[in-house]
Amino acid sequence: MTTKTANIATPQAAKEKKWLPEYNIWFYALFGTAVGAGTLFLPVQLGLSGPLAMLVMLLIALPFTYYPHLGLARYILSSDSPSPTLLSATQQYYGTTVARIVNALYTLTFLLIIFVYAISITNSADSVLRQFWQIQLPRPLLAVLVVSALHALFLFGKQVTLKIMGMLVIPLIIYLTALALTLISHWDTQNILRMANDIRLDAPSLEALWLLLPVMVFSFSHTPIISTFANHCKHTYGDGAENHIRRIMKPSYLMICVTILFFVFSCVFTLSPAEIAATKAQNLTILTAIAQKSALFWIALTATPVAIIAMAKSFLGTYFGVLEGVRGLVGSVEHDVLHQKTNQKRDKLISMGLIFILTLLMTLWNPNTLNVIAGISGPMIALILFILPSLSFWLVKPLRPYRSLTSLMVLLTGVASFGIAVFNLLH
Image (cartoon, rainbow, N blue to C red; front, side):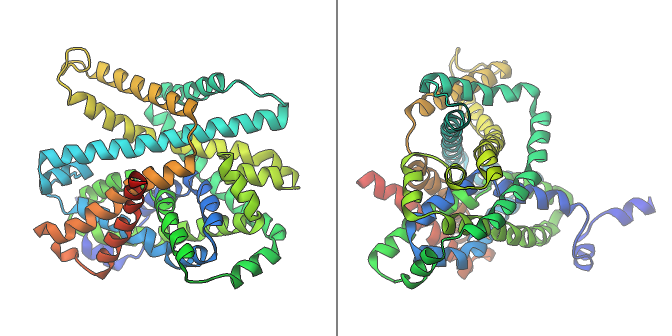
């Protein structure tokens, strides 16, 4: 009995120990979820946004990542539930109707994200086939093969799939860091000096910075894991959960920002503005562009396949949340064919079928992924990650202790990012 009591983590014990061994799993979980496929899209938009946007991103990346995710964790932790989630917290604060709306928005947001990954994987696979084997499959056939392969991975089961994803995290981060280091010798010095001399505070630069915001939201966001993270910490540490969350988040987000920024800037400094513009026009990721330009054999050989692996990992990680969301939507439909309360397996099969068909259709359509991210996905994530928690700090009485200048800045940043979606609708 004495031994067990000594092993229980308490708020007082947490103050005495800076780092607990059980923190490691969440450190790597946050790190691995944040550094992934989204990182491959940011250099393209950043390279098109100009030097002012690059300077601002360098300065705000850490608070831009830390405070919104901490705010979402606080929003969830403040719920009365011993095992809170985003939806249960929203239901407590705003009622069932608003919770259902948030669930629908959450599902739509991350459904669009798996569309982006499927489209990009298909385009990257097409690039690999043409680069190495001079084969160009018809788009419909390639789309069916890619989408079917992505869904077939779930036949291994959730636990096996998660283990495979976990195994890919560290190699991917090492690869991106090694690539960024290697590219230093390929930096275009004249282009860097030209950008440094071209930093100006004018209307076009501010507009480019505004358009960069939703892509930053997308690239640095790992919203789905925060609910699980907060749930675990409240269940494990009780009232001391927030102290533990902050202790894990700070070093994790510092490492995330250093890794992402180093990779992103190294890619932007290597490619010319024309090459970056061509990458967006061809609907490719930055790794494919680097592979096409680099004279280094190992980069040309590995860059696009690694991009496919990174996006497949992110697709799998996002798919579980999307599947649960779609099952919730199917479950809310009172229909003899679409939903039977006694047949949860049928609900799951219908949901997987819907996701498969919608993903295939979007992959066949092949819209520009950066336009989808900047115009829809990024703003929708901003609504859930930036606006919902920070606005609730001012509207919901139990959350008012969290009102601060930083929460206000998070709210304004979220509104600015979401404004992109409104702007697109009006134009």
